Amino acid sequence: MVERQTLFARILPHVVLITGVCIVAFPVYLALLASTYDAATVQTGQMTLLPGNQMLQNYERILFSGTNSTTREPVGTMLMNSFIMAMVIALGKIAISLISAYAIVFFRFPFRMAAFWLIFVTLMLPVEVRIYPTYKIVADLQLLDTYTGLTLPLIASATATLLFRQFFMTVPEELVEASKIDGAGPYKFFKDTLLPLSVTTMAALFVIQFIYGWNQYLWPLLITTRDNMQTIVIGIKKMIVTQDALTEWQLAMATAVLALLPPVFVVVLMQKLFVKGLVETEK
Amino acid sequence: MERRALFGGKLLPYTLLLPQFAIVVVFFYFPAGQAVWQSMLMEDAFGISTEFVGFENYQILAADPDYYKTMLTTAVFSILVAFLSLSCGLLLAVMADKQIKGATIYKTMLIWPYAVAPAVAGVLWLFMFQPSLGMLAKMLRSWGVDWNPLLNGNHAMILVVLAATWKQISYNFLFFLAGLAAIPKSVIEAAAIDGARPMRRFWTIIFPLLSPTAFFLLVINIVYVFFDTFGIIDSVTGGGPAGNTTTMVYKVYQDGKAGSNLGGSAAQSVVLMIIVIALTAIQFKFVERKVQY
Picture (tube, rainbow over the protein chains, first blue to last red):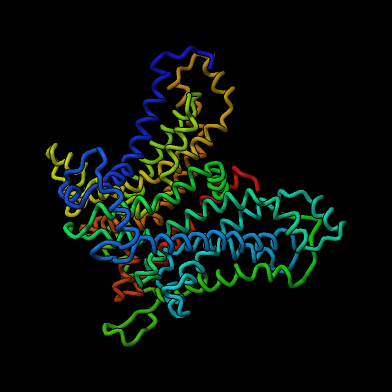
């Protein structure tokens, strides 16, 4: 910048940003703290801003045996369910959107635009506007309390299809022509040329969709009734009982920490891909 | 989207589209159609017979003061969350956009809440403000505030707004940061040479250039509050106390859950569908002008 900055102008951004970082981190820090105390200390609000000494006991108990009251399912099982759900949704969305977009961009066939719109319009039909009818179909198909019921209805993706379509349209036509001259058919072109080009897009999409899948709430709430099918995000809510005395907050907070760690890890470790995915899925 | 070099094959493209279509038809279009159909049906008091009643469910909805209260709650919730998270996101983005040391670390430290599930975010905030043991609730009480989100509707609203804002700041921060990066530095430097001070530069040059980003984010934030805050509301307040934090989506869930009023719940679903269609249309009309496919 052309002007000389005063000391105040140089320090201000750091002050604001550090304050922001602290405010943003505080709720998670408190949860982490609570998960290191015994029940009595947390229950009576005697917790301080320094950690207690019950951390290992709390996490061991929650992971392998669960809480006393409402949900007796160990959080280990819930973590597994969440992981399966997130992986199947993310990979499923990528797979079916990839081939749909391939058909729409690289083939000429009757009703091509109709097909495109049919997928596009689903953007306007989120689960929240068709809760009970969708539940009824899954129930009629005998898919309640199954991984299929949990994931299959969420695998359709207009966003991912649009993203792949957009990316495919930037692939130079010379590439298609060259492949054709080399005698490659649609399968070979897809496998040897298009797929390797799409790796970054797929990875970025995976990061976004993994988080989407992991954080699902309304759908698993409807579809799962058995404790051993519960995901961790649902499990933690069930640990909070309205009558405070029954809530084992130190265990609930340990579960909250376990529930937020995997997706937060994904974002922090794959920050570049995450930002790319986020910005591009919104275009 | 026209291409010259294409593949032939009559059946292949349909086969490729089949998995997506099967899911979309079975789990999207059919249930959406069912919702529209159900919204025109009514069960008798004993649930024995169902009859076609046309738009009666909608008329009942339009005359229901509870529904207006829900709409008002949703509006207040949306406006507060959008305003707070947009302004915090903008402030942090403007600060992080300056050439300062550690900008990358700040960025990482500010974006991770995006990855926290709404229901988990709700539980974290509930813990801090839980009237009997929450650390911040105790602080408020020591200042003489009779804090109790379990009984006081305004307190409950404040709590869900805080949790929802906390989660959304990272998203707005990222997009504002991208918007700021797209503003040519030469424009800002020219203004600085002309003698415009930083605050003036912000309001007369940077802010107007960011307004497309801000508008886009406003729409996204409204969509977020409408649909993605379900988990926060369910885990923090369950729509209470006395329905003070029941949003439109939450009411559809509750009315249908009780099972007594499927027609009414379906009519509300259709109203929501119309709202999503409108929001999506606004979003795409705007985006189309800015980004060329």
